[in-house]
Image 1 (cartoon, rainbow, N blue to C red):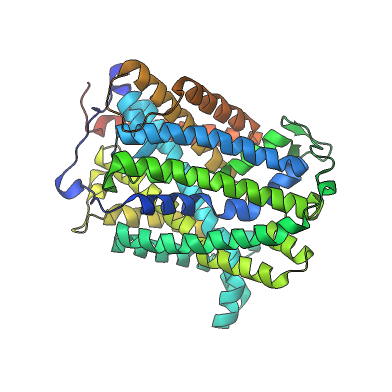
Image 2: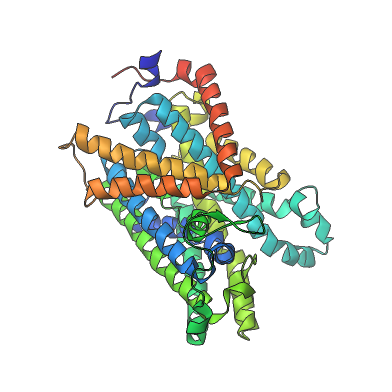
Length: 467
């Protein structure tokens, strides 16, 4: 039994016939997919949450979270080009670490992607529901989910159905539309920086770090500190891992995956730090801390209400790119696990266009239930926990591969791997323990359920032999 728990998938995995995905994507699609996933509700809302936890030092929180994610991105780029098939961290762990670790990583990714898709859909609904209620002439109560006192969040369900339909049309078509919407989103953030930066005042940075560096419980019972903020802001950075799930659909994986992962991450770190500096310098952090729309609030404080409306409208138009990127990644994780036999194999069928129709519909059903009926305000941090586990696994896979097969073909080799890898592992571990204690508890419960499912179903049905 121990041997079966640690059996590994062969390094070079080929799939064919009805279970092979079509190669239709180039590096511009991948960069847009990464930026579309990374730049979303995180920067639009979490800068307020982060400021409430760290004060002006939220700038450092962004830099720390971005540095750790950049190291993880380099590890992802190396592993994605060495193992250019669908599945991302799940597949790398299966090839390098063994079946049970791969299952735990895949189960953690399911947690990450499902909650992100659902949470972003609910966040989009918050912007769109008032507009839809006014346009359709229906009571606002019909547009609200459980968190707002309603029964079902119809706009959140609707946007998920639209994105699922777009993905069913084909990967290339959805990626092209995603690229256009990403430009809308980036333009809105550039406009914010252009309006806020001229109002920068050094006095707004005093005191710079009112709550200290490490996570600590304050007098009001809230956990604050630079690292407490970084652990939540981390949500705003990840998304580049969705690019790795596209490896099997990339025309030139060795070149395009590297450009997509590293390029999108570098672009977003620069954008986020610029937005954080402009926001904290323009208005005292206490005026937008914990606001659900901090950037729009800052613009209104600066007497720019029209620009604030433009920012909100851009969010309504462009936030679906985040849903698309993570929905895409979720369906590909499910697809790969089904193709490996860990989930029902009939879900791994693809259409004549090379699109995994069944798994896309299966994924849509899961996230529709989460977004439409379940309040997510207390569960969103679980997405961070799942991502941190996956990042640690990818960095470990890179180090193990460097030791086990130093001469194996790698189109991209991470610089200073024995620095990059430990920084990723230790940094992600520290961020995990900086998450709220309740989040850590539920993450353990989730993975205990996953291991039970694996032992009862996945272990006996996995489609590989010992190697």
